Length: 63
Image 1 (cartoon, rainbow, N blue to C red):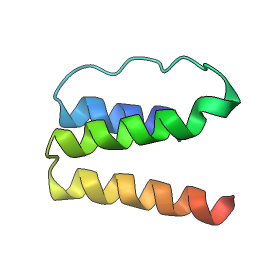
Image 2 (image 1 turned 180 degrees about the vertical axis):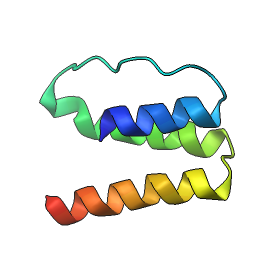
Image 3 (image 1 turned 60 degrees about the vertical axis):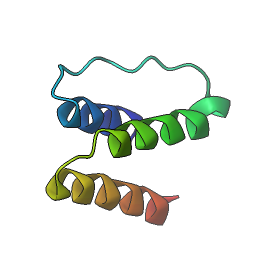
Image 4 (image 1 turned 180 degrees about the horizontal axis):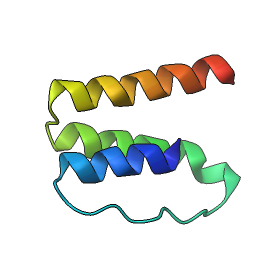
């Protein structure tokens, strides 16, 4: 999930993707917030925002 959102953020910012390091399970929520902020700050096209929203909604259902 984190990597997928990072990839979407890179796409929104028109830069190459990079692997997201695994820091610690306790900071996953913070990583998620930062990635979401990055995506929104890039003012992505609607389809990219839809993909991000769908991914988050799907993860929420599975948790």
